[in-house]
Image (tube, rainbow, N blue to C red):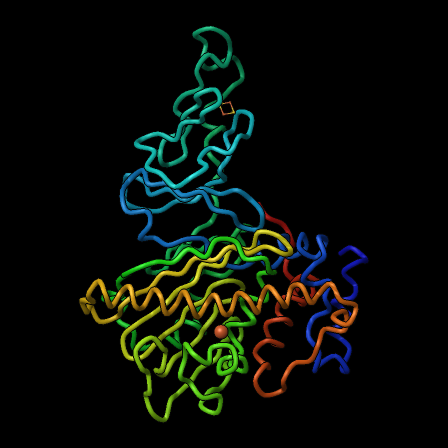
Length: 375
Ligand code: FES
Ligand SMILES: [Fe+2]
């Protein structure tokens, strides 16, 4: 591990740092971002998409995981597969926007074509006029490179290095906390695209798992008193929860008991009692850039009117815009030398944030004894 990352090891080992957050460089430094791509974002199951957005055979979606261009495709067998989104000829990115590719993924540059299982089906004139397969060229060895994928209900996860435990074992702490959800009834009703947020992906995650800010930042959009909240620290499942003594939600504000759960590193699910879920796709794009989309679900098969759905979309849009503003200002604050000390974490409300930061720090410092290396 490069010397410039030694600061994370010192932070982890220094008992005096237990009340401080990660130093600013962990949010701004390009070398740290690269180290995260090589460890945190490639060794674990990283959420990359929503299955319901790939309905038909041939539906294809380009995604970015750990900075790598990948492609999700629904094949003719109805399954979703993941490949590196690059042509085996000159490595052009194959699909640059969500679309249905039909039966073949065709490269726009020299018309090489791959079927939905990734097999190379055409390499026109590669060996000269009308010679598609020159001597020594084996199409079977030049299909799309697959990537390990797990589709859990509506959510698509990628494990780049291929060595993470089976998804359901990895995600057990989260799955256990979703007990009582009948996933056969979970149905998407709307989605929101927040585009790119000028913040490090970790701030988005940390913001979601600490309840401390809720009543201050969301004073007009939520009705969840601080005293009813508590944090959740359970291995790769970190979060916060609120059990309201009284359900007080008025129109246009969130006032129900809720669970805000994450699966390390980037998956977020909000459970809003009695009958809604929200899932966030957080896409780390660089040290200071994260894209976010959110899907809204009902869990009891209930039919909501168009007006109700529009109301929910507006509520969540407003809530998250409030969060994003805070996350962008956390990022801006990292330009200050004061932030090199990491700021302070509440021992009560932000122990979940500390646990999250330790997972990151252990991973980039190679202290979790896993092998680095994407395949
Ligand atoms: S780069 Fe794809 S066909 Fe040439
Ligand atoms: Fe928030």
